[in-house]
Amino acid sequence: MSQRPVNRDVNLDDLFAGATEIIGREALEKKIRAGERLVVKHGVDPTARDLHLGYAVNYQAMRRFQDAGHTVVLLIGDYTCRIGDPTGKDKTRPELTREQIEANIESMLTQVDRVLDVETLVIRRNSEWLDPMHLADFLRLGTRLSAARLWERDMFQRRLAAGEGVMVHEFLYPVLQGYDSYALQSDITINGSDQKFNELMGRQIQQLFGQDPQALMIMPMLPGTDGVEKMSQSLGNYIGLAEPPEEQYGKVMSIPDDLMPLFYSLATRLPQSDCDDIMAAVAEGRTGPMDAKMRLGRAIVEQYHSADAAQAAEQHFINVHRKKAVPDDVPEVELPAGELPLGLLSVLTTVGLTKSNGEGRRVVKQGGLKLDGEPLRDDRFEFTAPGEHLIQKGKRHFVRIRIG
Image (cartoon, rainbow, N blue to C red; front, side, top):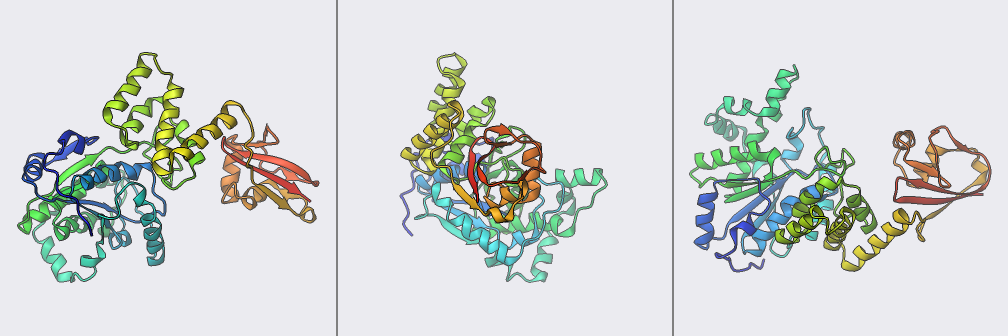
């Protein structure tokens, strides 16, 4: 594996850009100025197949350390994924099978190269040290950690206050994640604020074993396109790294205007000075919010696809949304007339606009469906005769059906 020379003169403000908090910064800066090659850790449990811009907030910070010559480790929590971290959740996470975990890992690793330099990236799994660990060793570690400290976790306190339970495996999860930092001899871990408690446990365990405690670089949680909840696949408010250019661009255009400064700073590779200039131009009326958001959309699509794809996605958006036109490349699906009448919900799943009747029903009830340009709010609608129809879901999804 190739390694760049360590840049001891790197601009620390650029290296730590976007962080809301850095714990152990003074000791970390001394290591950097001394020219030490840091072990930079970021851990992720493979609970989903697709990565989104919320993940990339951490990956872009990791990339800066790669470019400065440090060793960046992407730690796959294939062992802890079987346990289930309740981080950010007020209920127990469902267990995944080994097959699901491996499928998620394979999918994730085909997407990280959109941000990280895979030539220097180190990929590890925590099953390497947690699978062989004997119960006696784990219990021995427990004799040196305070249960009272674990109960301080705010999420557990919320559950207890609400009269809900905390499972033993969830209670012990921070110890397992903290052990990862010791196993990797991590100098710094980069993660969101939802992982702060677990990574502080890592500092404590490292000290128990005589290691220098890792620094914590806490990155903000990127809100989803709804502007309310954090970005999440399960909430449907995410922008995927591997999504088609038109989809990425359209979703960027749907974010609330007040989120633009955060998205510019955390979701693009533009220098912070450029981001500040753009938002200053909007505040002073020299640039319209729509123009600024279109530039944001281009920057994100170009980063994960190409400049040509960004231009094409923008033109697609203009044609469909500004000019209210139908795209030229609408997919067409033939449906047999012999199966008439055809229920609307089954048609939506057949042509790929929805994944289930339940999703289709929600789309219709929420006013997100048009048939031949007119809103359709009756989820019991049926196609009863041969013909051609244009179905539109939301602002960006079109399918032309031909019955018969």
